[in-house]
Length: 361
Image 1 (cartoon, helix red, strand yellow):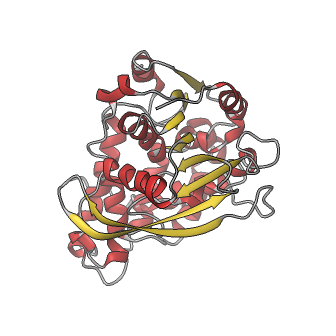
Image 2: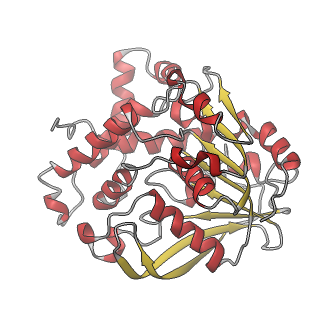
Image 3: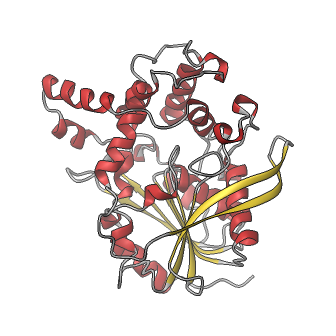
């Protein structure tokens, strides 16, 4: 396989640095402090047929359980905490805002395999951990909501990137569980094109790194930061924003040096599982089953989900009550990372929460 090892480490560093730059955690949040908790799912069965006696699912909540429940899903290799940013949480959770935490009970889970939930590194299983996919991750989220938190219906399920794809899975797999579905920075079709090929190259670069040692490393492979920075630059920043940040080769070198200096704070096996979990993603066969009101939000400059493919327009025709909001490219957008900035859609989200019907089972 092609070796991206000298380039890929920058990928994750760059991706996470960019997301952090787009939406820094608030220093004085305008919403109640999150409460953290964990719930153990017993006898968790994966799509492979493997069963783990216990799977721990970590989560955060904001607001009181008496509020209308809202589920918010994060992107690949992140956690629920990644959604608690100035440009997302402070635009949505404060008084009078679309997801006012005095009215809504906001649930932010760490996906199976991510954050503080059970994952290859925390279980000690390393590469013997069951190969999970998005169906497994959504099943874990469903069990947390329905069994762990005893919630019968969600007013809204909203997610970004991987979280957006999982919103499509939720809407097709558990159509009775939500009134509103808002998938962002994704498409409801098979993982394909650049989106999949870059993921495959990332995974293969990890597997082909001698320091990875078939997952039995004693120290994190040094190339992880470079791999992730490469991936991020290729798929997550927006052409205009990236050019404005580095209009000369010298400024480009300086930007890369900054990204590459950031330490890798994840686990290589966890990262490998997280990106490979998307391989069989394809909610398209179930689009007609969706009962929720759907607002799909993408940006015109999303590198992973090009608007020019026409996939969204074709898919939305099969959704009974849905529409697409396409954010135009501008100097303010950030490609795949644009939907981390709620200012681009908070008006539409507020109107949707006000007008969308509450479904009956």
